[in-house]
Image (cartoon, rainbow, N blue to C red):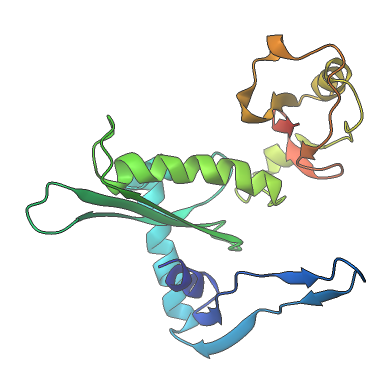
Length: 218
């Protein structure tokens, strides 16, 4: 399913899935890149664009609304199916692609027999999971927001380097330019020790983000 959506996102061209991106020899340091392998044109580029547009509508105004991530255009399709006959068990799913203008990421969430408050529909339980995944993955991959207006451009700021700073210092540096600091895994700020030092940040230094954006630190 992810491969099918990737084909749509790639303008209709099928690209063979790969699990390994590169192999690094631990002794010599030699790196062997596993290049993506393009195959045949499955559907026309025109058809792929139409399908992407329809998938965008699913998230913007259809059953996939719960997959929205502020600042990014996302296309998707929700799925709800029965797991067998008369089993009263369901499979809920959501597959999404983003950003629509220049697709970079496909995510597939499949939940077997969900029993939470959200019910068993893909839009109710799988789409929110996809939203959380994308909200973290997109900044981590440094994918720029794609629905930035001209007014927004004036509010773009460059992310500074806070790695090596203690938490208090990093927080002040970010707040001074209108950015919010967030501890990964939503650790309570009150539990942060005095000598807490930032070891990594997302997005990284030099990336342009909207004023008010969140910088995730470890």
